[in-house]
Image (cartoon, rainbow, N blue to C red; front, side, top):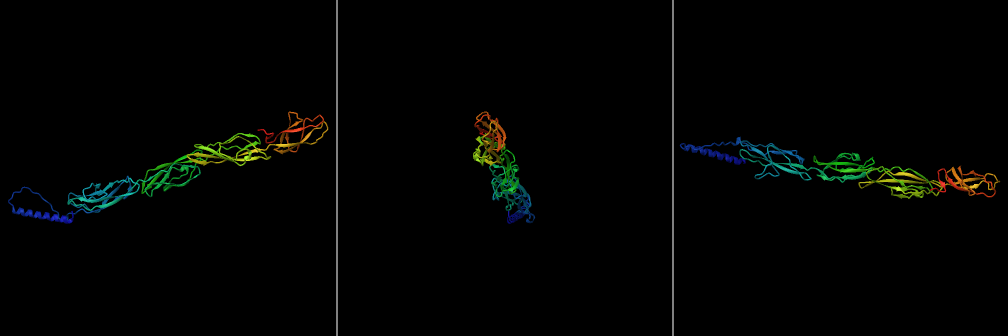
Amino acid sequence: MSKSNYTRRFFSLLLAMVSGLVLVNVTQSAAQISSTSVTVHDSSSTTLPSAASASASPASFCTGSGTTLSISGGRLGSGTPAAQWVWYADACPTATATPVGTGASINVSPTNPGTQPITKTYYVRAEGGFCNYTTKCVPVTVTINPTPAVTAPANQVYCANATAAAIVLNGTPTGVTYAISGGASVGLANATGLTQIPSFTAINATSAPVTATISITPSANGCTGTAVTYTITVNPTAAMVATNDITKCNGNTVSAIAFSSPTTGGTVTYSWTNDNPSVGIAASGTTSSIPSFTATNAACTDAVANIVVTPIYTNGGQTCNGTPDTFVVRVRPTPNATLAAVSAELCQGTAVQVTYTATCGTAPFNVEIKQDGITPFQTYNGVTSGSNITITPTPTSQGAHTYDLMKITDANGCTNPVTP
C-alpha cells in the first residue's frame, strides 16, 4: 500500500469514529447490543517496509555447491503481523508465485548441466505486515560454473628414446586447464595448468614394455572435474645376443648363423647387411638367421666381411629399431706352393732335396709329398717358404724319380686340397 492510500484510509477511519461518537451522544437511551474497538495509528508512529539491497556470497560457484543470498539495509516496517523478506528465482512475480525461501538470508544450490557458465537471477522483496505492503523486487545475479570435463586421448605407444609429440586436449568450459600425473616412469613429468600433454622423451631401460596410466584432471573457474585416464606404453630398445666372429678357410661349409634377442613382450625381427658379399653371404637380408654357406676367398689374403644386424621390435602397432650387433666373418685363403729340386741330378745314394716356395697361406706349413707315386705320402712338418725339404727315404735305384706335393696345411689350419 502506498503512503497516499494509507493516509486516505487513516482519515476515513477517523471520520467513522467521529460519526460513531456523535451517534452515541444522540441515542444515549438506546440499548448496547455489541461493541468493538479499533486502534488507529498516527502515520508518524507506523513505518512501512522499504526495499533492501541484495548480495550473494559467493557470487560465482561450482554446480553442485551453493551460495548464500542476503539482504542489507531496508526495513520490514512496524506493526503486527510483521512483514517478511521473500525470495523468488528467475523473475519477480506480478501475482501469486512460489517463493524459493524467506528471511534475511537463504542458501540456494542451483545446478548447471551444460558445458559453459550460466547466470541465474534471484529477487527479494518485503511482503505483508500490518498494512500488507509490498516493496519493489531487488535482483541479485549469480554465476553457476559447470563441472569441467576433458576427453581422454587414445592410448599411446612409443619407442624408447623417441620424442613423443604434444597431444592437444579437448575439454570444457572455455579456458579449462589440466593437471597430469602418473607418467614419471615413462618420462612424462607431473604438471598442472596445462592445455595439452607436452612433448617428452619416452624412456624405458628394461627389456620389456613399460606401461603408465596417465591421469588428467580438468579445472576451470575454481571448479575441478572428474579425472580421465589413458595409457602410455614405451617399448624397450631391442637388444641382441652378440654373435661371435667367425673365421673359416676358403671352401669350408659354415652352418646357419642364428640371431636371438633377450627383449620380451613383443615380436623381434632382424635386418642385416654385409659389406663383402664375396665371402659367400648375401649383401643384405631380413631373416632371423644367415643361411648356411660355403666360405669363399679366391685371393691370397684374408677376405673380411662386416655383418651388421639390427633387431626390430614391434608391439602395440609401433615398430622400433634396436641396438645393432656387428660381427666379422673372416675367410682365410687356400694355401699353395711349388716344389723345385735343389739338384736335378745326383749320384746314387745321395739324399734328394726340394725347395718349398709358398705362394699362398700362412707359415709354417705341414706338407705331404708323394715319391714316385708311392702311398702313403710322407709328411714334413714346420716347413717355411724357401726352405729345403730332405726327402726320405733316399732313392736307391738309378733313373728319374718324381716328387709330387699332395697336401698343404698352413698355420691357420687351411688345407689344399680344400676340406669342406
